[in-house]
Image (cartoon, rainbow, N blue to C red; front, side, top):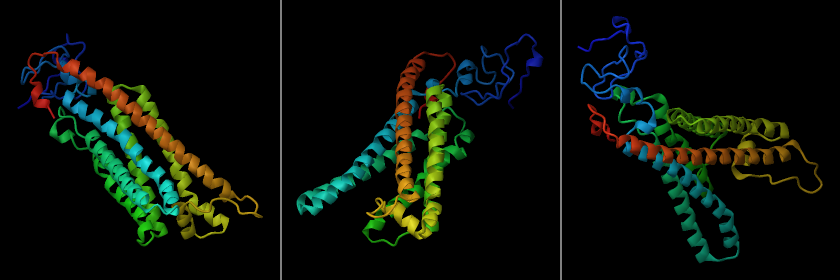
Length: 316
């Protein structure tokens, strides 16, 4: 049976561990032991177990996976953004009657969108891998699980909205709003997960970027949520608000009509979306840079031999 050691049993241990700190080799509770000592159960040195939460002391293979995941999170949306830019170009080519170019453009559009989505999902799965140093009961948390699998309903909703242009029935107002809520919630979890990793990376810059993204996401969610209210005040129905949001119409005030609140609100909503997109790209770029630096530190730390520690058991 694992025994507990208290600092009161040995008054000379002035810097005894004052928190629950399981040994990274056997899981023994190191509370009350000196940081420069050894685990009484397995004999491993204690110091690595106290720094286990810092990512730079993790296995290089696991940290490399986090780095690849942050890279995919950065490149995936960029590739999907290329697909969005191809849409108006395809419309112009289609109007010119160039069937071959239209077909090739459609294939390129599907490839960019599918590739970008696949890269993004791959980045999520890599970035949510648990630390192999953690005990089995500590590897599942609501934030990590939601981040790892919460993209499924949000992505399904996005795909259905896109497929509506192909003839599928349009979503009603409630379903549309619930889809926006699912996407917003998952994006918030994504930002919180990266902010949590920033604490383990000891990166204040990355943590600040996460907080900025949360603030911009809140403003974006409030702006989108107020769309039906603005449309009702404008004289349209809530269903009309959804249609306007999905199709991007009306483009502006026609001739002979004065500018209304809606004519000002829609461009402001577009600016909010652009601001949120820019803040997310900055967050992903910083995340990739910090993980790249941390990977080099992890390789250096892992190359240093430590007596009494079998590090291969912590390989991912």
